[in-house]
Length: 172
Image (cartoon, rainbow, N blue to C red; front, side, top):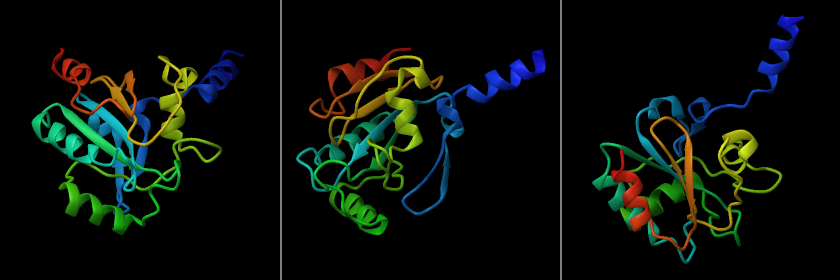
């Protein structure tokens, strides 16, 4: 009986942040378990958005805090089709226009019926244990601490290098 109860409980347990594996723009596997001990910012990106210049701010933040911060971009075409490009086109755009060196993942859906499992985790308190949220637009940022715990969501209008983000990055 205890064995069956253990199987039932285990079957319903949710994945933690470090359990995720995603594909990069180049098709390689990116294992989130390699991020242990670092702060992580997850951002849904788009090439044809009014917030697209935040790529520059994200890259500057990444370069400044690369010792303890990993920024991960997830191109998404969920808002007014502002990310129509292929993986090759997205990589070229990010590199040539903004010099992006932080990890960029394959294009995914960040809302709706095809929402990627990572974004289900980020937006559901039942899964992340911290808060519910909704992805409202491109360049929404999720902050994950060194232990893989969701800390906060930063909405699109707030720049990546805002005082709130810097305080989070510089706190122990």
